[in-house]
Image (cartoon, rainbow, N blue to C red):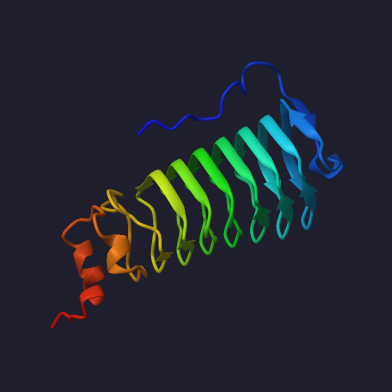
Length: 210
């Protein structure tokens, strides 16, 4: 596993800024956003580079064509926010609440999700490369026609997650919860599981344990 974390955040002092002051298409570099509530905010075609978001609350927001490059999100709440055609490059979500977020058609490259509440997120038709979900709850989330490459689940909660036309070949699920996972035989083929998890997949071949 070789996932790059946000780069150059300590290269120089970050200036304190407020999300509510950002205007459309503005590029933001080396900024620190901290202790701010900005629910229902809309951002369009912005670029954030070398930034930190600490204890930021943006619920029910809309982000369109935003690029986050080398960004750290810590203890943020983005519940039910829509990210439309956004890109996350060398980013980390640490102890965040992103439940209900819509990440369809997003791109994730070298991204770490660490100890997040990510239940009910939608990653349909997204592209995930070099992405780690560690100690993260993904209950009832959606991976439909999702392009994945070098994706890792480390003690993730995949309870009742739906995978559709998303192959998990060579993906290690052995440390994660997969109860109620909805997936086809074709998509689970080649995945790595332990002997106890096999019980959760018996429904795929139409048998029941007595």
